[in-house]
Structures are given as C-alpha cells and as structure tokens.
Length: 230
Image 1 (cartoon, one colour):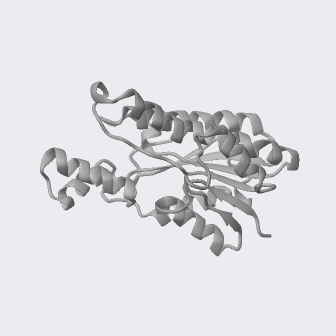
Image 2 (cartoon, helix red, strand yellow):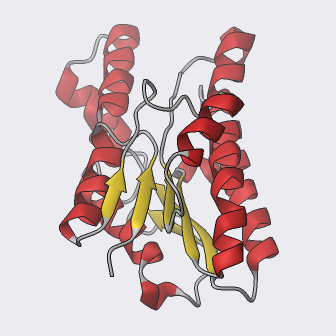
Image 3 (cartoon, helix red, strand yellow):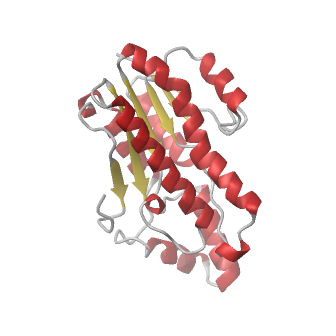
C-alpha cells in the first residue's frame, strides 16, 4: 500500500537519497526544501503539514552545521543550529503525531549524527543540537510506546554531501591541506575509514520506516563502522 511520506530537507544530499528510496518503493513522497517549508517557522510548518492530509512517515532530515572553537562560536551560529536541527524536528514531529496517534499507525525517523552520541571538537552548536534531536526522539518514543507509532533515529558519521564538502573546505582553509587530505581527516574520525554515501543512510531510514520494524521504538542506529555502541 502506498504511504504518504514527508522528508524534510529533501531536495539534495541525504534527503534526496531518502526520498528516492521511498519513491522507488511506490510511496507518495513530499520532499520540501527550506523554500517549501521553513522547519524553524511554527506557522509555516503548520500550513505545510495542514495541506498534506494524513502523513504515514515523517523523516526529520533538515539540518545545518557550522564549525568553530567554542570560544569563537557566535550566538547566531548556536541558535541557528539548534533551531534547524532540534526545533525543526520538534515542530514537524508535533505536526504529524496527533494524526498518527488517532490512526494508531506511523513512523517518525530522525536523521541525527554520531555527534548525537559523542562530542567533536569545534562543533558545540551542532553536537548540542543533535543530542537534542535524539532526546526529542526518545521522549516521543516514550509517549507512543505500546501503540502502532514508532520513533527512531539514524546516526551516521560523515556522509558525502554538500555539508561535508563545506567541512572539507574549512579544513583546507585552516590547515593548508589539499582536498584529498582534508577529506581523509574527516573519514578517519570513524572506524569505517571512509565517507558514507547518502544511499547508505537512506537504507537505514527505510528500515526503520518498514512495516516489519513495528517492534523497534526509541532506538538509534549508528552508521560508523562500529566505533559507537548505541
């Protein structure tokens, strides 16, 4: 049966790969970018989801990152990352949850990060926001325990996306390394020893969204080659 799926931040990178997987399975997919639905804007989220009707699967994928030592992290950088990565997931989850509860069926999957489990240098805002996103998922899971609704999170290491390319560029700028060496430095942060591909994350998301995953709730699936035990 075709489902209604919403993938926030679904126009590129991980979001586009997730949307493609659901479409290939025959689902009707809405993949809004910021121009379609600013997930930090309460009214915009309410309007967007209000026009969709029942949502069967929500993927909280919209996200941003910035890198700076804590002492040089601006309040604007901090707030922006918290608003997109955590508040955005909250507003979208809140928008779909009542309908899922009333129908006693639904899947909520949050794309977090290995930074939701451990801290990385120079990522105070990002790490805090991803910890918050996973905390939101766990609280949601606690509320829906014993129902047909589940909430889980996928936590990848660095993925080959525009966001990671920006991180590579920052490393190049600060250290003088070439692109290959800068990318290798990021890849070395996980036992996997390479960047993940977007479709690997998409596979994990569709696993949590499957009908057969009804018994899995409140869990994080870490994609890093085995460094973090979730």
